[in-house]
Image (cartoon, rainbow, N blue to C red; front, side, top):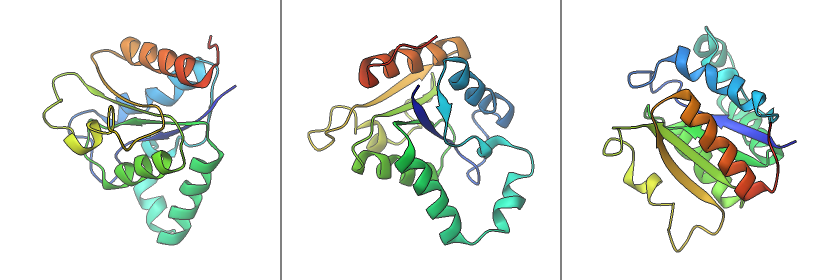
Length: 154
């Protein structure tokens, strides 16, 4: 079983992909037989709940989840400085990272983030892919995990 850190926009909003659609991704990950390190991002009321925590507490909690994970999976259709930081954290930890975004948003997703795929400086598996449907997203996750983590999924 692979442990996956899931990240997506919280404070950046849900303009391009709704919170309801993003909330289905953790179920897809678990349906593939993987364990989730994090799934709180899309829960109703999470912003208010997180605002009660100290900033270092949030950082250290999430960083611990990243360290305990085998890979990172980020839905990056909606802009997020936090997800960008978490992506960089995981790259620097040498963990495989898969970034997914809705097809048609290629020009709206950070070139810097997309440029990590194929960069001479990124030594860990890193891929960015567009998807149309949740079924296609599921297949991208399965393929990435099998290719880079030597695991078989359901």
